[in-house]
Image (cartoon, protein in one colour):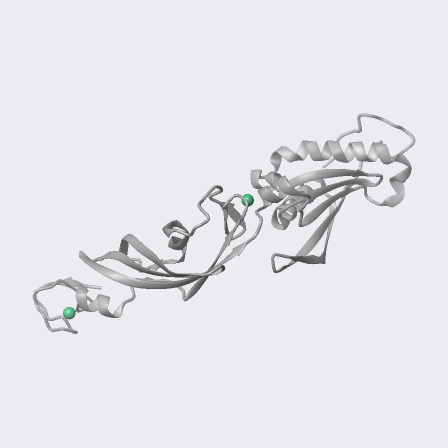
Amino acid sequence: MSVATGEFCASCGRTDRPLVDGVCAECTLKKRPLVTVPESAMIVICPTCGARQRGRHWEREGAPMNLGSEDLAPFLTVDPEAGVRRVRWTETLAGETVRRFEGVADVRFRGLDTPVPLRLLVRTEHRVCPTCSRRTGNFFTAILQLRGPDERLRSHAADLREYLAQEWDRLVPELRGEWRKALTRREELPEGWNLYVTDTQAARGIARHLKSRTGATLKESATLWGRRNGQDVYRVTFRLRFPVPPSVGRASTSKNPAPLER
Ligand SMILES: [Zn+2]
Ligand SMILES: [Zn+2]
């Protein structure tokens, strides 16, 4: 790349402009799309709180239900040499689930300001966010099963459950905050605990963490549970079989089982 003046633009022949790779900025921006958007985009909105889904995360709880430039900005791809000063969008078609936007981006490129027209078709989908689901029902996508090493300990089930609960309480502070937020409720069963989780990735993260910290074995299985808002919903079960110290499930009914050896 070279910058020079007093030479000809290879494209328009002018000599009074700075050149980059032999071409002036005006000619460069005729050929180079400084800002692009995909033809269509999908935005997932929680109908209860207005939060938007971004990848696996939800953000902007309380945002307006109508789409605005903050919703559309993530779809812009901007040339690394260009700077977008602002984008004015106009909604030109508003259907129930499809909206068309036409916009003009004010872009600065090598000292020149230029308007770039944009057209974007947006489909919206309403999906209840995990936080609202948790408030409104028993929605979950994954179950963490905390269990003993095998089925033999059933006659000492209470000791086993207490031991598993202690292990859980000991390790919970190490879990990421976003994982903990996905936990909804726990259920006590003769053979251990079931923990219900609204986010399968969070459940997987928790399961792997528990496995690595305790030496538990981990088995993952998925079942198609049904459809929700037009999408297949799988429920994934993560079964963790914890090793337990000898004091749990033997003749002794110790209330303070020895910590695990590592
Ligand atoms: Zn030129
Ligand atoms: Zn919500």
